[in-house]
Picture 1 (cartoon, rainbow, N blue to C red):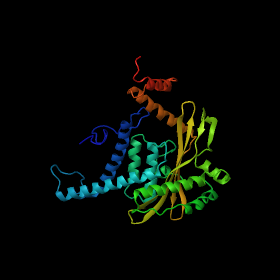
Picture 2: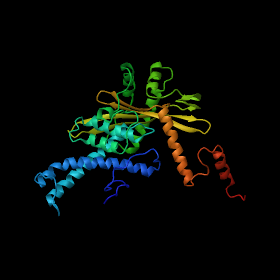
Picture 3: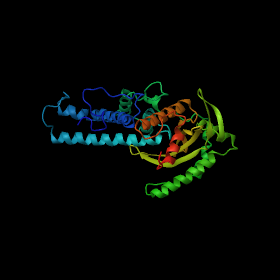
Picture 4: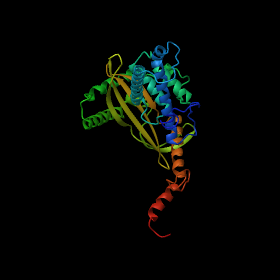
Length: 354
């Protein structure tokens, strides 16, 4: 009834709210994303119901006043249910196509389009176009895409030579990919952990020059206890932590035509801990393997030392600290050089008379 989902969905007589750089409150930003997905749902639903409306109105497209027939109401409700299920599946499938760190709304749009295109080649009902238009109307655009066309939004194939792609054929057979729908959750978790350790050990082999080059292409840096250098136009000093494998799992999906697809999803991350405040900057990548031929199909990465990513993480951290200070959740404001010392002193003064 006008505004039930978050705040912006269903508003009458107003244009779609757009995402702005000064929006830092999480629920306010979340409302924009909910609005975009719901707008895509409404567009798809209207398209699916267009023929029913034409039949019910003798081609005029305008329903008469009063209650509609029970049969028409049931058919419209059925189409709404099918549309909602399809949209929900698109949103869930996209999670496996997202970068493991520093996720932005634009990245999520690219993940939705790529995941759906990967499973359903022919978008005859315009689902992907509806999502693109809804996100565009709300100023949700990926920063590294020049135009909002379906082909431009797809994640790119891995930018590496065939010989480097063939390296993965040596480690994939060593992984236990016997995961099934009947497996217990604890067993699935332990299996993923074992596969992650095996993949991490293989990838971080320090004496293999080809694997070293592979790590660079994936967006990682060589670990170092003390590193000094420039990221963009800023100078940093700190520790580069080792690469970590957080998830190695098999996803099996069924397409509308009855075909099935098995994908191995691998998530790798790395952390840079900057001095003197121990601020953390993270990078990582998601690898998507087609298990039909054990080929690496997509590489979704956020490079550890990408100037854009580092700058964006700093902005997010500042916004979070500023919000916490404004609401009295911390004892010092962002940028206060003595802030951490104040918090430490307050903790040890607790209960003492001043």
